[in-house]
Image (cartoon, rainbow, N blue to C red; front, side):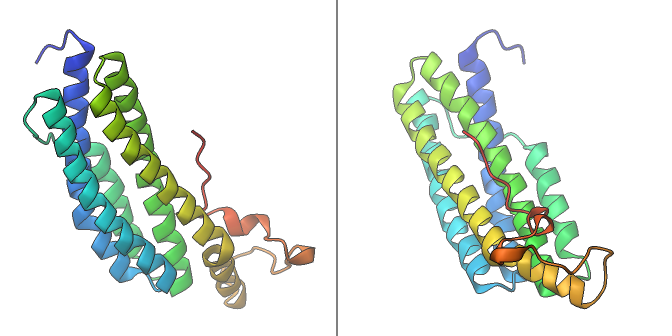
Length: 197
């Protein structure tokens, strides 16, 4: 299909995002089931519900544009979910697995933030203010989810994973903690990615 306008490119990208969200709806419950931290489990369950609303909101975007809601397989999301599945299949301690799940979830969030930011901008440029407003709502939700995952990772999941690793002497990382109750730099390596808008 030859695309000659930003409107056409917008419609194609929305099909890709629609597919991504539907794939994520199937993956999030599996991630929540694998999580051991009650807070992480709850965050993933709540994001599943939010993703369902985002799918419905995308259908409203298609309607606002006068287009049928159709999905075009999002290969990027397929890859991100495949990576998450690999992490969940690892033989890891519960805390380390939780850190890996957060990292996988944040990769998804950052992909979605980039995607929604792009289509929101295109919708505005095309004069599609209703669609742009709906897309901005989802963009805000994705950013909030990313921030929540960062908070979970930095506040207790990563430090707990690091402690477990040190106790088992499974890595060459020093067991010394930084003074004053601050987190050591290694506690932030997995997950806890801060997004910039």
